Length: 216
Image 1: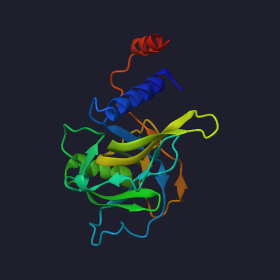
Image 2 (image 1 turned 45 degrees about the vertical axis):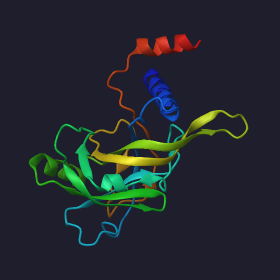
Image 3 (image 1 turned 180 degrees about the vertical axis):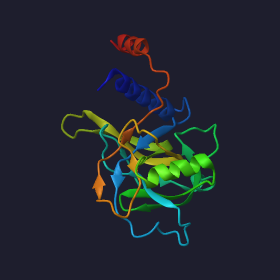
Image 4 (image 1 turned 90 degrees about the horizontal axis):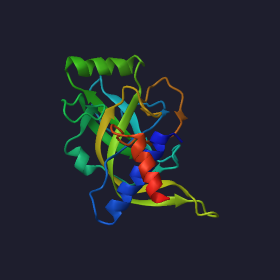
């Protein structure tokens, strides 16, 4: 694992520990998936606009960080009150679309998106339809979680997010990690898993070194 990823994981564990002890609010996390499968329709929503697209936005597969996000644990009602589809988790610019419906189906969380009638949103829509862009990402707040440990050694394998609140869904121009993919009618089913992507705008090697030194 790279120094940057090590720092991100250490920061995540510390943030979750602080939240669990009531010392801070729950951290806001991001997860990317990598799944594409054929669909017969846009989902359970009837009468979806012709240009609507359906995405797998989350799965409960073990990701490459060893984490699991339970599909049954998603709290969706707060998000349904403001179902925005953002560009790259940017909360300062107008949404590029809205979620018409979001639902749990087996091991997946799916959402049907409608793109806004703005030039940029339509450009993003075209990128998805033409296959130049495929990834999406979810932003969420963990509500309940446990550490996943090896049964024999007790070694931490990852984090099991048992319950979490969906905050937003974003178009992902270049997923830092394999990401949630558009469900297309002519695709072959495939699932690669997804993993955590914490905000890392201000990660410095000296901070990582100082943290490790303090723990020795």
